[in-house]
Length: 97
Image (cartoon, rainbow, N blue to C red; front, top):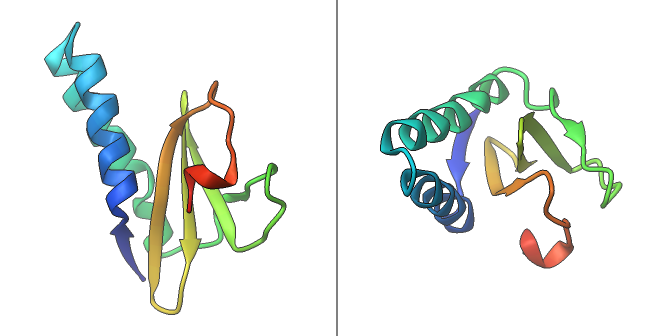
């Protein structure tokens, strides 16, 4: 399975990195790297993330990398990362569509 990052998810990781970099550029790079690495297991185990409780849709899952939630959806041969949000943010459908 291949992992594809949506434009929205790339934008969110960039925003997260920019915010953290205001205080510590090295920490920002580390956090961004760890978020990217946290989804690598999906290549072999695409259903290993939990179903997102707010949507109760078995097709939309998430990997938790505290304090971030990485939402994804499995398609035929691709796992698409939909977005990355902070766990304190309210998750609504407009954040993934």
